[in-house]
View 1 (cartoon, rainbow, N blue to C red):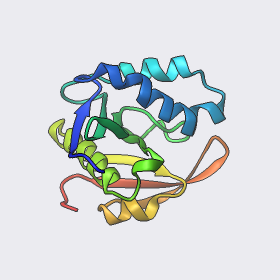
View 2: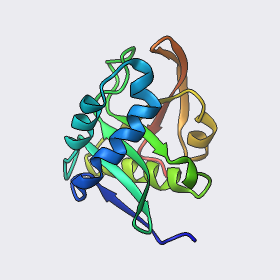
View 3: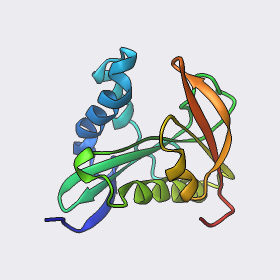
View 4: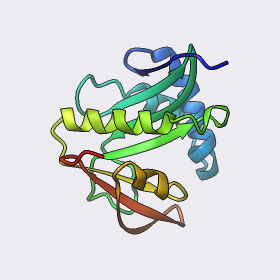
Length: 159
């Protein structure tokens, strides 16, 4: 049975940092040889109330279901671009329920509140999802030797 959906932040719920860090590390950090402790420290530091850096967590009932972050840097190949929607992850048990949309919208709202005109992301497989949320293709990049779709969101537009 599904519980009610809610959104929180690592600033409000620092106890969720280890769970979020494990998701991010398993998905992206471990394959790159990163230490989980480094990932957890980065997640735990994303506690801004306004502006950079923030980490959001969607909850289904009391259970953490997914995460996304608003960060200054996310791309080794495009350090000229900032800020980023990063680390969008929904636990496989909770996929297909609209949680990614909630998370992306939360980061977009945080960026708008901070006066950010353009937000960036890159993805290997989820370009159609982001396009459905109003993101535009902005070329191809290579991250850690893998081709990725670079995307941008001009925040003056509604999805």
